[in-house]
Length: 390
Image 1: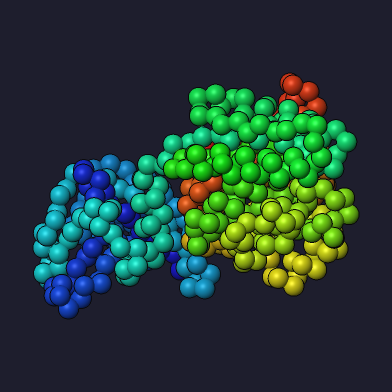
Image 2 (image 1 turned 60 degrees about the vertical axis):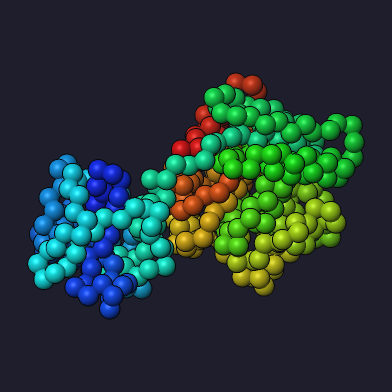
């Protein structure tokens, strides 16, 4: 496999070196590039990036190279190492060698559709996204339990409060959950109240904490209405793809994903349902017969945490975490623990990769059923929420 090294150079004003223009700008308007090239035998990727930068631009950065990212492009037989370097140079329109102009560009001026010579545009976009200020963060706390079939499901309400506990510095919005009403009435009412809360939190990065999985119905529906290119990554031991007719338990938390796909109880199906290609299941290992058939028929992706970045591609991401995706030996404070789950490192690593390398537009962490107010499993749950709030 060929190894290539690339360096993204940033000037004191925060502008990015991304153009090595041909002598005739008018004739070659799309000849954009970032310094980069093949790693020679005996070189480290960082050494190759530094050599290529000097050879192509004559710039010598003032400080160390900072590792930014690593990609494998199997279809091109390429391993790619990306570094960031800061320079005090300001070389707009300076001429190097054969009349080639070296230019720094403001991030706002970069058109993501323009071709790059040495580097796919997705890496540059990821870099620019990482430098962009993320919106204010907020917690949406929804202590609903009525979507679960557990006789002790009220522990889910305690779980929502415990999940939110360490994040007091963030804005909190609480959705009141009705008591003393039939479960389906409660689910419908909470969905409506949550939808209103999501609208009021527009412009913020919201992490919803539950409660059972159905607390995420309204947040995902709102994200689907906003973004054409959305993909929902569903970390869960279960697929949640039942319908009222196919569900063995009749509990709505096992129907949430199917409802988001357009098949569910009247009044809960979103105006803009997801397509099957917009749902990616991670860690799913306990599916009912009807769910297995639906996944096969619709081609819903079921992937490992290590493959999730490749599968979602460059689409915007909404992250749903049911904590039973973790192996019970790691986290057992859930209603339906299922052996064979993810390790804590697998889950947090996948979340870290999504947050760092993709545009995550919202998230939820659900199904925490603490055994006591001092449940030590809370530490694991908090680590999951923290990864989403970075």
